[in-house]
Amino acid sequence: MAAKRSGALKKRSPRPAQEPRNEPPLSLERIVAAAVYLLDAEGVAGLTMRRLADRLGAGTMSLYWHVDNKGDVLDLALDAVLEYPGPPQPVVPGDWRAEVVHLLEHWRAGMLRHPWSASLLPGRALGPNILNRLELLGGILSRAGVADAELNAAIWSLWNHVMGATVTRASFDFSEDDRAAAQQRLARLGERYPTIERSRLLLDDDWDGTFRKGLDLLLDGLATRR
Amino acid sequence: MAAKRSGALKKRSPRPAQEPRNEPPLSLERIVAAAVYLLDAEGVAGLTMRRLADRLGAGTMSLYWHVDNKGDVLDLALDAVLEYPGPPQPVVPGDWRAEVVHLLEHWRAGMLRHPWSASLLPGRALGPNILNRLELLGGILSRAGVADAELNAAIWSLWNHVMGATVTRASFDFSEDDRAAAQQRLARLGERYPTIERSRLLLDDDWDGTFRKGLDLLLDGLATRR
DNA sequence: ACCTGAACACCGTTCAAGT
DNA sequence: ACCTGAACACCGTTCAAGT
Figure 1: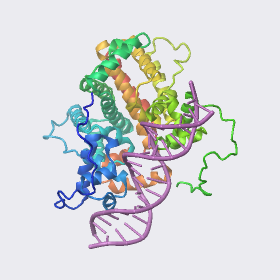
Figure 2 (figure 1 turned 60 degrees about the horizontal axis):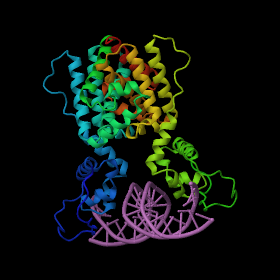
Figure 3 (figure 1 turned 90 degrees about the horizontal axis):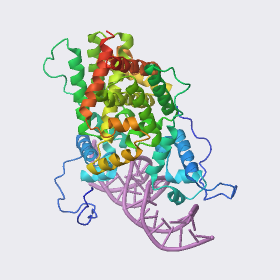
Figure 4 (figure 1 turned 90 degrees about the vertical axis):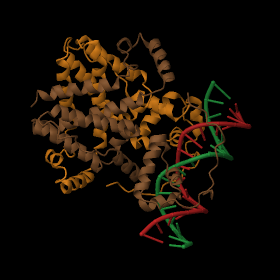
């Protein structure tokens, strides 16, 4: 149940003179940080050039000095959120499965912390952090002995699994109330969708387990192709 | 290169009196059909309540008699595009792999014909046609001997593969010019991303083959779990 | 170099009204 | 039952201008 906003929405005056100064000057970093904050807090629909400028204590059009358009802001926010620190300790060499699992789990965890990122990613430019992750993944698989002719299919299949699992999970992350409603709706539809109902496909919330099992499926398949 | 629009954009007058009559009355079916047309022609950003009404020769607000809001229109267009005629001939019984492949290839082909559908799907309500496809998929796997405890993971993994492969493909479907630009950019970045460059990950356009190979990976993994 | 407000061409939706 | 225009509260971005 959505909490009702108490108190009146203050109409924001164009600089209330309360804290008239002490905003640092605009910069790409500040803009990107504020964009990520807004996206986390309000989702894609909540990111607006006007709101973004407001949050930074600047005029809307000031943003356009640092950025070409709103698409730029999205590209930058996305890549900012996908930084990869690199593999942990000198990973046990030779255990390519562990390496792949670590890379992809870390990737997925990062995107789940910013639920807007997964659905945005396919549509936007591939920033350096994303390319870096693809490069690392390709390297692990290649060293593991995956043939060149199979390499692209392997990379994309793993990528698709991470994207798909993350997007799907984010979209099923509804509240308890929604859950109960879905439960009921499904019970009513039970006779048309018996398998779905029996397996509780839409109610099962073991997303971590599902992700791992699916990943193992892919890795098992890959293991036979080396 | 985008063709330049020749001729002036006519400011549409509110019913030019050219063909003043003979529009059939509004109906859900007409609305949905027009929405699909607009989405196919102009993408998600091109679907606007005002443009939709315009196309139907109606006032914008007339749509709201048939539909609660724009989200409804998207849900209906999406489900309309995902109809499934059912499996073809009495499929060779027992060949679960062939059945799964047919179901998913058909699904993917349908979404590629409407490139907006794949990226929209995860965010919207699951209509009857989508549920029907999930049900069929679950049934095939279950009859093939996939254990109940593994069934959800199997269904979601295949689903994710179809969604991911379709969305990824749609987003890489750029023009020849873009292609050349990407080529160049990648060559410049070659030293930072040697594996990606060597495998031509971002230039390879054998999406059908990639999809099939990834699907085989999953099915091989599944075959060992029955 | 950096920031700004006014203005333009759009959005989705509420409401009170028409037939 | 079905359709409508005016109006509201928004959008992203262009432009000419300020410091």
